[in-house]
Length: 203
Image (tube, rainbow, N blue to C red):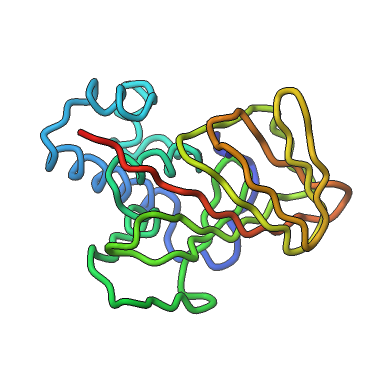
């Protein structure tokens, strides 16, 4: 859904981008090594190229949101854990307070994780802002399903052969393997709640 845009860093980002990418790269490499996987093996599981995965692990490439979702699915951990390393265990209910998670930028989209960590890995929930001035014609896809709900602004959900205009209060549920992209309508940013399912991959 979501390469690095020219947008300024969103308010609320707690770490410089370089530190975030370095930390993410180190965690991705550690996760792969823990499983004894080669880059070739991980590439087959994720359908992401070996050079791309190598740059992610080296902290020299910012991942797309679709790539983050795919990697979280393959490693069977929440995106929040992947980005922030907040542990593998949690109580039966975890409350994510407003302002408790950092806003990230990927492919011109500002998003923050609003799902928990630990054992609850079946869903990845994100609050996402799609800027009105964002120009990106690339389609994205990943395993699983997506459900999105428009909080404010207006949104075009675009597939290769059709598109749907969504207003505040509208929702959409679709197969995330279908190439898709998001675009705000008009001069106002669109804010959505997006929930992605994370099917289990066998190793």
